[in-house]
Image (tube, rainbow over all chains, first blue to last red; front, side, top):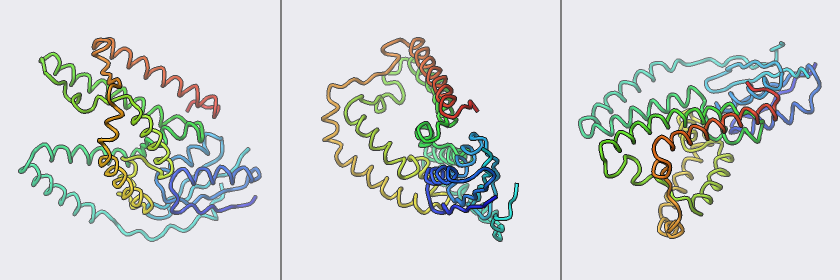
Length: 75
Length: 221
């Protein structure tokens, strides 16, 4: 199981979503991706997209207006 | 799920004192506006309420039109359709009441029955490209400026600049709108017919949105 971090701080939506989508494609099953975001819209659409794809998702608010979305690839 | 890679939560400074100061200051400001012109005070209260709901619900008009193509998700698209449906009911009541009272000009119709012409199409395309690049439409950009997102402060500056530029060239654009249709549905189909057509169109779009998401994502959530 590998862990990747994706720095999307300062990037407006939908850039974090597209970056996460591209990164997930290159990852193996059970790898974990941590997307760092500070755009409130991405905080909604990144987890929503990942959940609809069937992955395990967790959101951590690491600071005021800064989040880390943890996605575990399940398929 | 392992969370070892997650950053430690940064020390948080309580923002509640600032919120209290802000609310008191806003209250005083609204009171001041009310003494000058009650309508402006009411408009400010509605604006604050709208902004609050927009921020808390993460409602995003840009995503409503963009996510269709990007991820296939239509949850925000359907939210916008529902919002239009609700607004239709409210606006119909206001307009129909004025119509029954024999108003010469139906409220809101004097300036906002838009001309369906080339400027509308060009503007729509330009706005659509711009809002996807900027990551927000007008309300979304304002909301995120309030949240402190730096990039969108730049968007706001150019949003204002672009609007002023548009107003500056308005005489040119108005020339392209001469003789194009301006349609107010109740004039064409009657009040009941207009309401029915609007409702059917919204229902049709809503069902199409569900079908689209099912096709693109395989879920209807």
